Amino acid sequence: MNPATATPSAGVGGGAAATDRDVINGKGQGVQRLKGNVDYRKAVKAHKVSFVLYAMCAKNKVKIAKGIVKALHTRGGRFLKLNERTGVFSELENSGKQGAVEKTSQALREKQTALMMQIRAYESSEGDIPKTQFSEEEFYQYSLHVFASIHGEPMSELPAPVKAMVEISNLEADFGARPD
Image 1 (cartoon, helix red, strand yellow):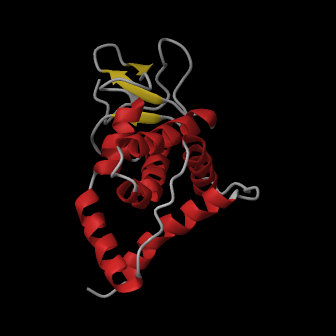
Image 2 (cartoon, helix red, strand yellow):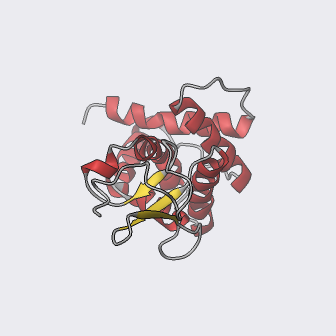
């Protein structure tokens, strides 16, 4: 069975069906259009500025990826891979070379060079972007905020560090508005 044509209703490990909050691992338009994958890509995009700014330290990169994975799990989502031979989904582990955290780190790295150039151009004209250090819990709280925003859910009052991350992530819109 091809993951691009798989339906999210196929059983997971012979049990429950995949949901619209699950991220299906695979390539192709069929997989990429699934709601869980679309929402996941939006969440990754919301973290990219922070990922580039804090990439100087490998621990920070892992904190960001773990925050996204933990928030997705907290909200009932899973990272699934389709066994093409059996047509059954299995859940990816969080760690390891093919795990959810590594897959998320890989997604965060995509198009990083172009964003880094935009950040440098912004900083040269507008001043430095604050590079506050955030904890793993704060990245997780920010990730929960991002998913709630994507799903149009009401959000509670944000702690100061999460507000700071929202401001930093909103800078990407400023990059796009700047003339070259």
